[in-house]
Image (cartoon, rainbow, N blue to C red; front, side, top):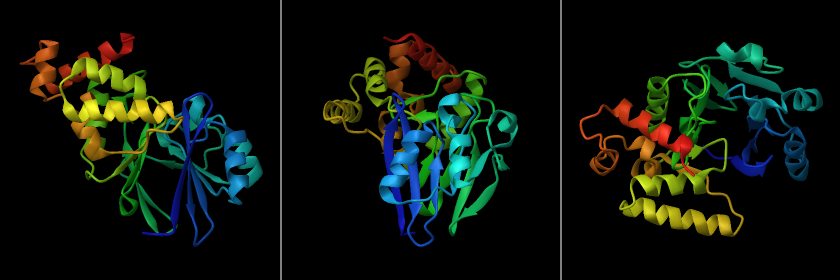
Length: 257
């Protein structure tokens, strides 16, 4: 498809704001609503009208702007059915396996439990884009707050199985800290070494490191590389299952400084 602009920006301290603007219809969707005032500024600067919010999960830094934006724009708010009671202003409930049409584009809903139990991602195949919220980050993944390690591994793997060219949009600018951890786990991965240097350069210039691509993440993100011989050897887990390796990586990341 054409006629769709992706506009990404930083809000709060490290949240990504993301607006999708369809030039044919004038419709604009926000992926989550971390900061109503900043989203309004970005919309006003472009003369766009907010018609939709696609909510990935119930955490406050993703839904805090819902009610204020709904009051101003009357926008539809889509979110996961199992978290509906925690998502302010929700008008449409979805769950994994659902799909809906947005301005002539199929939007597929993917269940991604782990970070929260009802977390979902939104995949627009024709635009080769996935909006992963706090499940998969560039060079990292989200903390496991409500679900199990098995659930999070499955969710991350599901996203990693999307077509390689798929652009990965995530909820936070965490790539630099994720890169430091990834290098501690797989220091001799040349793709990771190059990506980490690129990330340092981007951040030094105040630039964003996302979107990434699924292909790039498969080559450098340790949470998508649980089968790597080098990673397993470094962890001393040559004979472990992929889930066990994933859980060990996530536990180490939790305490990594």
